[in-house]
Length: 102
Image (cartoon, rainbow, N blue to C red; front, side, top):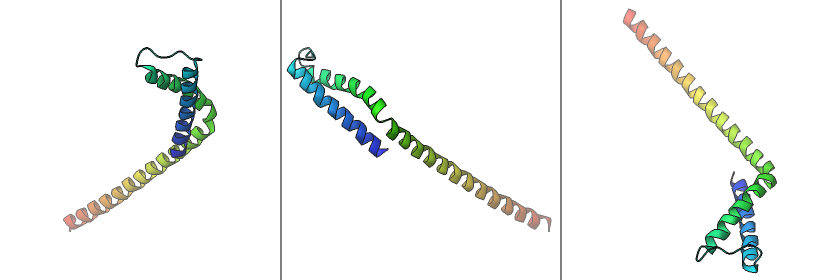
């Protein structure tokens, strides 16, 4: 997941540099007043989102598989802990009932 996040930030940084250059060279319009930096930031974000969606598809799929595997392992561990607690509880009750009947 860290690798995907770093790659996504890299795509955003690349778009930021390209948009910054395009705005200052006059290809894209400048923002109003002091909002130029915000304009460049938002335009970079809008451009980087679809690029990341297409370019990083494999990495995103690999990260989601890792997350699903981790969640499945955690669910299995929780279920194993629950079943162990049930066994201990059942044996304690059986011993308590055996002692009470004697």
